[in-house]
Image 1 (cartoon, rainbow, N blue to C red):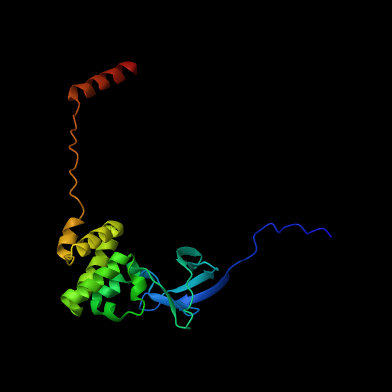
Image 2: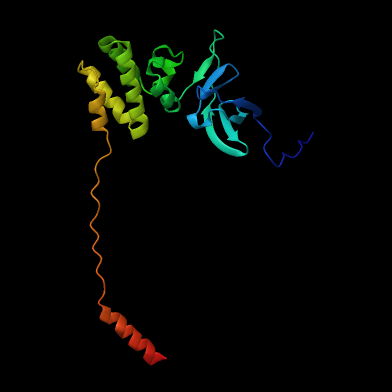
Length: 202
């Protein structure tokens, strides 16, 4: 028996769902907590749910793609968290970092998690939380996550607690010298010559 012709377009391999972004800058879908940028708080999103990802839309405009998460084998909620999404709320309440259920997923690299452990042991909870939120904010705002992770690990290897003020200074935008632009104006006599030439041509 001959097979039928293939369809002209790919069949739909996603499910559409709608979610509401909470004040925590997140939504929960199929027992998984997903963080999103804080500008989406209060918005209703249309989500195409694929096997490996979520494509999020505002109306018909695509705005975000997230890795699809899965609930834990125990039945507890899974978490797909980007620290960049939650920095604004953590800055308002840095102590919230201490008991976040998704804290392990929040740190983008192992050096950040180890740094928080060292800060807790060396400074105590409130200052450690403030310093760690500042470090995460620095990684986000200066786009220096990889370099910052190396700097943090170097401090830890030397048995030194990272100094947030020193890190901010180290990764601050470098001063750029503006080029000197010299503008040379032509002599006014040139314009007189143009006017005379134009008159002669007429």
